[in-house]
Length: 64
Image 1 (spheres, rainbow, N blue to C red):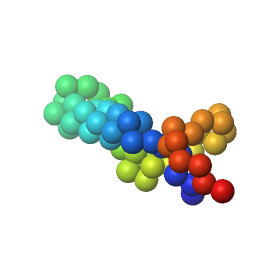
Image 2 (cartoon, rainbow, N blue to C red):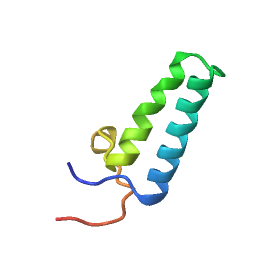
Image 3 (cartoon, rainbow, N blue to C red):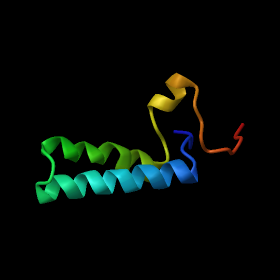
Image 4 (tube, rainbow, N blue to C red):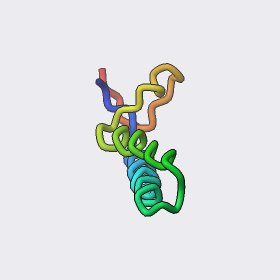
């Protein structure tokens, strides 16, 4: 897996994931809030499986 998620993208993903999981755990939103696990994991691993399919790389580092 190549790193394809940059620092700003990573922070937004982790933050959104934590907020969604917190809202679902508190009962403020339905069980769909646990989908926040997806952005949390993609931000933690710095890899988004959809990005290569779409030709996106927010990392900014050029790796050969």
